[in-house]
Structure formats: C-alpha cells, structure tokens
Length: 95
Image: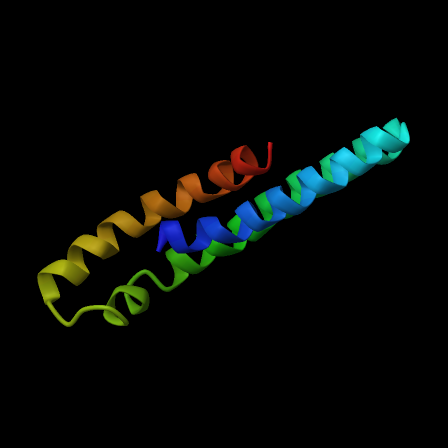
C-alpha cells in the first residue's frame, strides 16, 4: 500500500521537474520558487490524505487483500507506522 501511494507524488515530482526546467530556461526565478513550493505542498498533501486513509481504514484496507486474521492483525499494527512516514516520503520524492 505504501508503494502504491508513493506513485502519486512521484508523478508530481516528474511533472515538477519538467516545469522547473522550463522556468529555469525562461529565467523566471519567481515562477520557479512558486512552482517548487506548490509541488512540495502537493506531494505532502497527497500523502497526508494517504496517511489519513491508512489510519482511518487500518482494518478495512488489509481485508481487501487477505482473509487471514493474523495477517490482518499485523497489518493493522503496521499501517499507522506506514501512514506516519507517508507525508515525509511524499515531500522527499518531490524535493
């Protein structure tokens, strides 16, 4: 699940790098700062939503994949930890 949600800010990062390159080429430093801040906020925001989903639906999400009660219990214990690093992971991939 953490790898799946990572793909969203990765897409933002790829788009942001193209945008940053265009703005550097145009010599628009003010636009570059705005684009970078926006991309970082988008990466963190997307992952904040993913973290919230992992915490709120920590019992529902594992049941989409498995029926084994022990595996679900382990996933319930680990999903809040995965949710906690989601925000930082989203910001770092965009950065």
